[in-house]
Length: 620
Image (cartoon, rainbow, N blue to C red):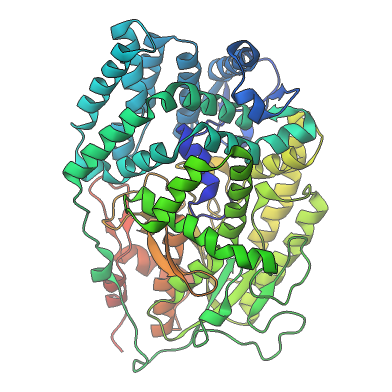
């Protein structure tokens, strides 16, 4: 997922406990350990597949074993031949190792691997909750000497209950609620539907799986064979724990917020939403209108999927899609409600869908959720960016960043065309004096590789990587040029939702070092680090990215979570600073936001404090 909101795109990862990114290369390890400082230093593997991934995930052990053997051999090669400096990548590889050992019945070895996985966690809630069900299962196997039957199930339940009930609620409440929600809707049909949606297109085009897909398939099989048979006991334990402790953390953000009023001495400030498009009809009084728009919309610039000019501020949809849109909104809200233990009608609808829909139809629904998640994204971001600022004027910079799900194969020429479009956006921001631009998206080489795997017949992962890097470099150059060409514009970017280092992934724009760029991580309503937020040396402040309410196209208000929501909260603050003092430079605004932020005791978080930051401005 390239837009930074948590929605259907991460559902499979949630259901199977994470997708390990199995690195990539030739078939032999280097003679001396190779130092790995970015995702692109990792090797690439490929796995032949004669049928579909969705058929293989449910096949008998003998049919699935060759894939397990290949994946294990390549994993051992990477762990022995590469010195990986990134803890997130080590966590992904260790989780894959754990799944392989569990499926092989290596219980004691798996317990040791689980301990290593916990040691690799950085966030407090992850350290306490990683692998709790897995640990209960592995210990029960050792205690009972079996992996099925009433005695085994009772042992799992006791092990799990004892551990869960000892957890500190104030630390783990968000992640425990999410884990229970994912267990509640998990089913073989839903997991298989996700595989059909995400992996079957890769196998259909090339007759192979790439490294990430193979790791995902292993995780899916583990979930179906090991976790789902115990779903009722595990979910019941979490529900009981939640019911006994369900005190919601206080919301710190309302007390910190600043609302400007029209009777203040404000200067109109243009705020660009570089995103998937905006339903500008929702913001009639906070909208910029260009008196000389040329071929574009008077509210900004827009490009379609192929990079051609569009006059629509929001991506056009068909009558059939428009008719189905309200049903998809129900499912989006249902997912969010489930994650937060809200027993709403929307949550019931989501439960019913997961429980009663065959995998073929679920695959279609997941595709629709992906599409509409992108469709809604920019409008939701825009509402956050202009909240409480009557001087704000929205500028639309629309493009489709859903790289992994392109319906055609990306090419260097296509990326170069978009690079030119991005440069045109930079020119527009400069010449129209757009002071703030929000960028709640990001792109990596790996995403272009995934797109190529789904759309080409190229079997060689090294060849795909080479082409993906060429595409990525053209794309990256366009983004960098756009930002450099508008030095008087502050660009605010989302860190990402993969709980990883943006620099290691070479995520653009989150990994970039530019004087007019500010990258934002996500915390929850109490200011605690979210489980999903990415990090790195460019991520210098954090903002509310948890259940943030805003508009979606059509005018419905919804709560969504992600660094996509944290970033426009910072853009919002920057816009207010420029409205109060238009003489400020982007560098000065960054300094004010950093100076006003509150550092956590452990130094991991720097929470924006709009009131404190605005108070730093000279009195007028």
